[in-house]
Length: 223
Image (tube, rainbow, N blue to C red; front, top):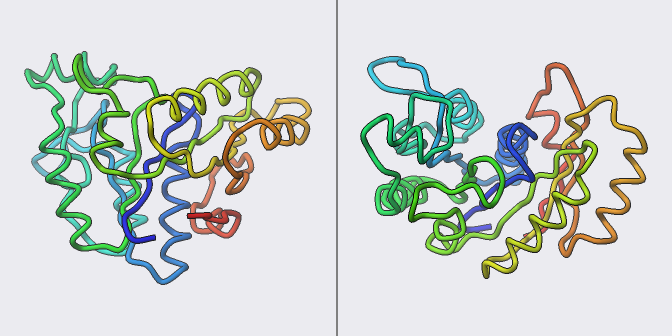
């Protein structure tokens, strides 16, 4: 692991940030200086003279080194909307170069950068920039977080197909138990293991107050 990972999900609200933080702690457990990055974040609060996002702050707390918030989250957008709409409200546009520059600064201070995407894989960053464009520019393998709930088989298989069709590497996937009422969870995980074209890196159980440090021990990073 000398570059990092890009974390995407089968949808929004399925545990990408928790999985990303757990990955950071797992990498740190391997003796690596790992930092997190949330290039684009919608839904921010004005803190200490700048817009800051809860997910980006969680990644910052899980990192092995202290880095500038602006590098962790170069596009911090106030309104909790699709990035294209939130950027329009802010009078800006999400573009590739500021993200690549921020990532380069992070990579210079770390052994691995865990980059968390927005929503699901096909969620656009702007009218002219898809997440696949960013991943190809960063040359990172992708980890897919699968939210365990009804419909996850369809969402996971469609996401995996799209990731590979976009010409990037799907290195693995992490199951995130987001629906405690889901039935036949183990059967669904087995079906996902049989059908997804990448290994399962671990299963994050449902918890009211999950601890990414503890969850890190459940992950097996296969890169």
